[in-house]
Image 1 (cartoon, one colour):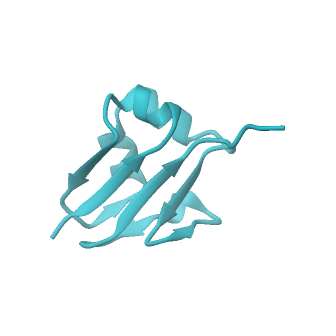
Image 2 (cartoon, helix red, strand yellow; image 1 turned 60 degrees about the vertical axis):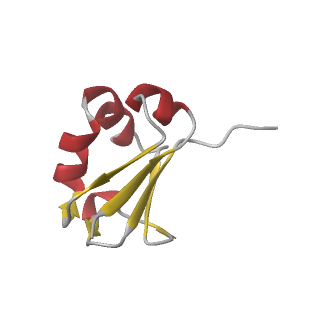
Length: 80
């Protein structure tokens, strides 16, 4: 099994893909390393959220994904 990573909104443009799969387990440092420098820079901003297994993480640096999990990288929501 693998972990599926979804890049949403402008993060998909930076990553050059909408989704990918990686071998688990995956923690915060592993996610940053895998995502590449442009996405990793955005992920470290407070306004960008990370969801794992359907739950937005209050502390994204505590990410601990295992095989079968889905990680969604959530850019800030805009609107008015």
